[in-house]
Image 1: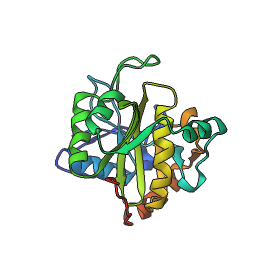
Image 2 (image 1 turned 180 degrees about the vertical axis):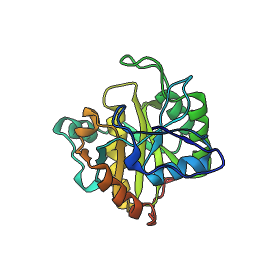
Image 3 (image 1 turned 45 degrees about the vertical axis):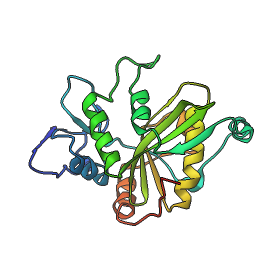
Image 4 (image 1 turned 30 degrees about the horizontal axis):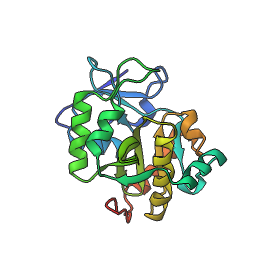
Length: 226
């Protein structure tokens, strides 16, 4: 039975109560204030819903993750990186990145990044929790990604590319820096071939939750301005 959240409480039901069909649906309702979103990620769930739906909270099983020390760079991407035809920055154009991630996709109808979601993550960015990675070519923003950083975990949210390899370049630059900053786990949420090519893999939700509970309480040394 689906749990409906109380707007006055930030608590979520145990992850084990998430539905099997649709996979990972844990709760509905509540709101998108920063405190609730941060509590959700710490608990092991995240918001995802379409325009016109109530806010839905998900915790799929298994969970797709990347351990930074397992990063794999393909030979073809390595050649692109060595050409140095792209520049990468952090937190220089968060609003533009999230707007681009919310834009139309040839393979999907609509977007889950609603106006309310966009506003919520922009607020989290202003509070220092949400961050963007930008890929530039000849001074133009051509790709990037954004996500949340909590303790020693980075929670990836969405990425976009306007030219070939632009989002891959952003991710390939980000992961080594995350590892250097003490980030031990990157949450990719759902399985994709794109992230699988970097070495991301599926792990049991319980194992994910056990690692998450420890890592979100540990400090990192991230310097997003660098």
